[in-house]
Length: 251
Image (cartoon, rainbow, N blue to C red; front, side, top):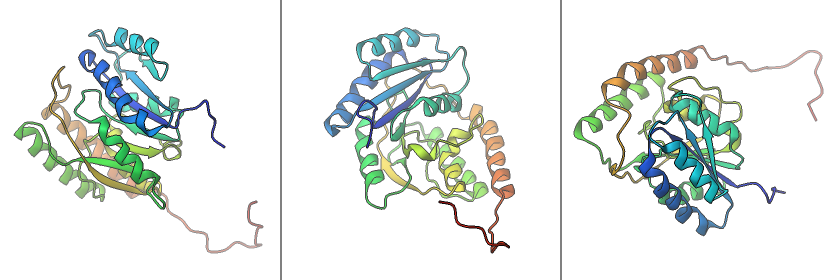
């Protein structure tokens, strides 16, 4: 029987200098999740912000106990922020999204519906059906996704979309390294979990500044991709045909 004092849904949001977006983000999360009648929490993982986001997260947390602030001592990167959120999330389902409001919280119920369906997957990942980015960003993303899928042997349409939903148990033993958040669906499939994709909306950024450019991600992303390829190719795979003497099955 579930613990009535624990949230059913945990939303993990890395935050780096997103002061203007945090209040609207929490408000929109409430508008999307409260009609579901399921307890929820939002974990705002502050990745060393310097623009006042720290104080805003504390203010939002004081105003609503469902909002939890996790503050890093220094900037550690987006993967570290996701990892910290995963390890502190209390929900049966974990949602990830960006803090810049380009992911729309109104899409979360759609992901939950598919995840909770009978025979549903272990994770549902969004792909941005209509990108609200510059032509250069769109082209670099398309090329990047094609290269990633070719080298990783996977078929994820949009590795850069942070809006995803996971059963919490899929993340329990997941080991992450810097940059690995882009390959979460591939890593989960390598561990035997099922992953499906759903189209989600994508909104233009209206406040704050993007932290990622085309060039500052290309080389780092390639190195991360080669690491995933190495892990896939070197992964142990064995099946026991029989044992002598036969052991009793575990109870």
